[in-house]
Image (cartoon, rainbow, N blue to C red; front, side, top):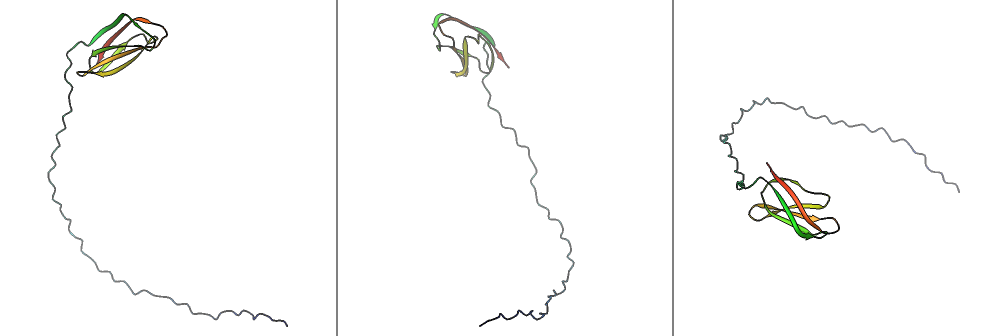
Length: 131
């Protein structure tokens, strides 16, 4: 028995529907007057005072030396009481490493470390306060 599928038939024309919006009425609106916002008069803010360092009244340059006491490799020599601020320092960079650290009473200390093998018995450092 042979069964055949029914033939597809085109759908009948369906009328399209269109929606029409009702007309929009515009009503003129008068502009509103500007609103004034009360403002306080601007007063300048006084600058905050910066904390000041005590005025340094000591020497502004000098020469430091160590003589006689042996300083082994990686041994240190410490000079204290140098003025606060930037220092220009001259020393033998082939032999010594230099560190600057804060010290008591708003001063600085220099720490020299012997970076060469063997014993060193003397060192000379000249310094100048740079403003």
